[in-house]
Image (cartoon, rainbow, N blue to C red; front, side, top):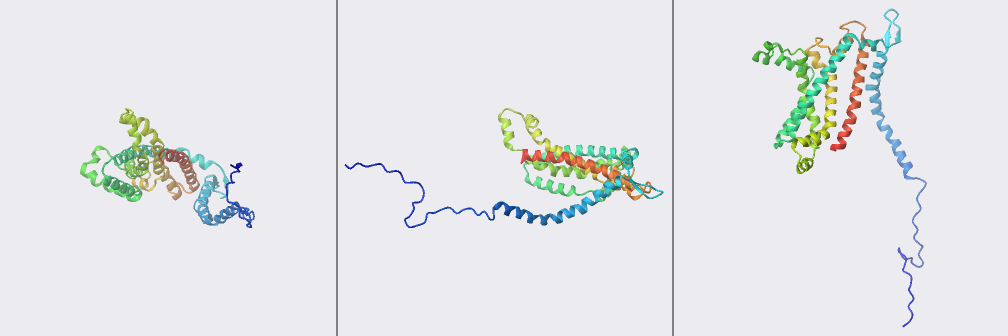
Length: 319
């Protein structure tokens, strides 16, 4: 037999054809790269958001700047000249104004705690209910009641639980010492719209609790109480704290309900700001009212600084 010499294996890839030019991959076009094109597209998007930033500057930036400037400005009653001073800030944190700020914080803390507990219990009952129709009814009612506040709510409570209200006369509540125009009455009125708001807020977090977690805990011998103590409540804690902070901010900023129901009989910072702006106490207290408003803005910013991280942590656990 003829000696067969081992031939090298053919190289991978297309076999060149005689008379045809070798296929060469096209060189990248360096004249118009993708990155500059993307940067140009980003530059073209900026004009789209200009109206939004203009709206923020006019509707939020201008009032905020005016408030800060007025809070630190004192007018001389004789010459009419203005000067920069912290007298308004110190005045807003002393005397009756400090009492009003403390009263608003106490009312907000108490109603936020009650709304968080009651709203969470109602939401948990809805989530665990075997009737889907109940969830739709509760969610729809909560969405309506959470937005029913202000003067209409105050008039409804006055007609129902006021001195000559229907329920007051029917059950003789006046003999028990109950008064709607007190701290207790304000708590009842605030809970009317804060509890439904908490139900709507905490429902997504309760839905995020996976049934597999409870089944795994039960398979390991854990009781229902141990599951909630070691798994459920720790996972829900960021959402519950975020809801409580939201309830505090809602109660702290409410004005119309308290103004119609109790007027100036209860020391609240929102009512004091309205009285100072309208000159109901002393004429020329507008800058003092701006200082009190600045105090409320600072507290609101602190509330947001606490709520945003809690929302992010809750989304990471339940998302």
